[in-house]
Length: 225
Ligand SMILES: [Fe+2]
Image (tube, rainbow, N blue to C red):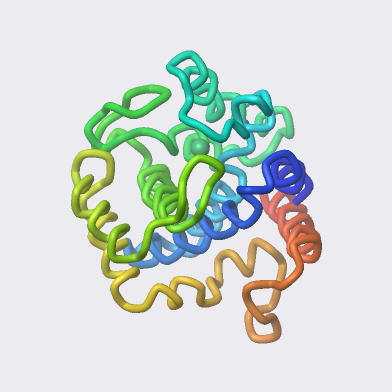
């Protein structure tokens, strides 16, 4: 998918982030009993959730230290910027609310709208948890990765505050089974990427190859829409 490739080129630290968030999101959606058509919407939203960061200046996006409050205000614009970019593409209507609300907190203290509880679309509540799991388990310019045990503790700590409690519980169960299990093939993601599950090793080893698959997959999604 060309858009994700553009963001990854701008911020190499998020190289695998979009795909990994899609994998976690699909596992959590399956645990929540969401149907396959909606899972595909969620997977596409997961792959595109941070696309608005293209509009964030590099000096802020790649800053190695903590952001100042004004810099954080600029970061907070990325969900709405993402929706503006995607809306201009003329498809992906169902994904837009998930992209817009992926930083809402269950207690209403997130952004951009300050929605709380079930007023936040379910897919956006799933993305919030999936996004944070990968952020915790991955090193960034401004922090080291934390371990699975510590990530589980954070999910308990922020359950019902930042995270939907049911989804946080599912995420704990997912990480407790075996962290590697979260890397199993996800049929929704594979479908979106246009790859046959039974013939494709996962993770796809080459980033360029993966983006090529994603591009084909999103083209199909556009036609299906
Ligand atoms: Fe984001």
